[in-house]
Length: 380
Image (tube, rainbow, N blue to C red; front, side, top):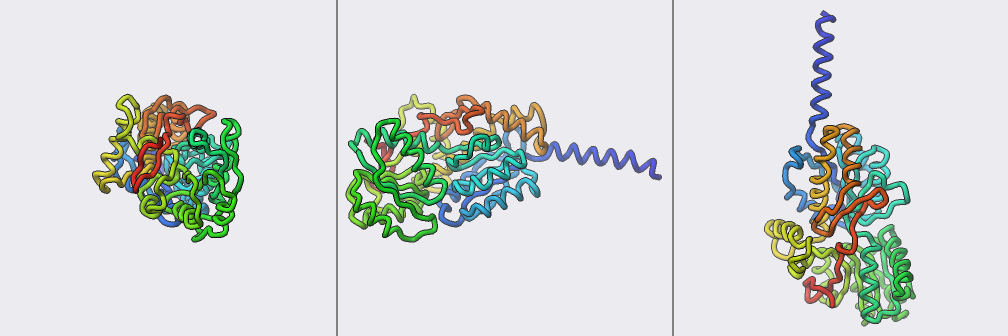
């Protein structure tokens, strides 16, 4: 009997192994659906629901978890993705500190991570991680050039105490020095969970800079914005691309009028010339999103979810030439294919990845806009 059963057992094991190699494409997504950055994560979840059901002929199995804007939760989600769900790709988070915490898990598991924040990793630590949003340096470059045209000589900084705030401060100072831009004359910080910045706002207003740079994200950026306005600040206020969603417009209200910020051109795609390669892709994304969620519900963060699909749709066929989903060989081939992405037109910009650049967006990925009575309009 044993002699009969052994070949059968081996055959069954081979079938199961082959089945595992032919499994659906499994993607683990960690988003801040609650907590301070929920205004970023919710529109992304909304757009994941609009994804096609397949990519390159492979059925998509999406697993979406809430990280509550907490790095510990994000790392726990990432660990579950690789140990329990055996995902082919890790995606997230939209909150920078959480994305950074997830990167270590992705690297250890040798699994691609698509980051939905401009998180900066130490040199050599991003082998498996790719950033979809525009880098802070690309965005600060656009902001500084605009400040120079506006005659801004001095800037007050009010930003998060975490990696998003600190990286923006570092990049802004470096870019401003290189471009002959304004000097940062006062720096104040606050935590994402803070409900007031009264003390910081008073100090910044007393410094009386020509412009104020607020570095925060989503509706959480409205509180410090309103704080400096309520303390009597009359100069120009700049925000970052972290506020490109309707929640910020709703919460900041009339205090947001005149606010300036760099953003992906997709947010104002109607104003783009027909020759702009982003216009068609952005129109497809926004038309689909607003048909489901209402006029003017567009968000730059939902755009990152669509760009993730476009990147995978380009890379997965290449990876499938070498291996099947569910295998380490497929994950490695997918990483290599993403790193070799060239001139992929997406909603936010045109991606060209290299071993030295896992973001791949250049100056085509940003434009300056301002808020005019609750609307996004091109800045002058």
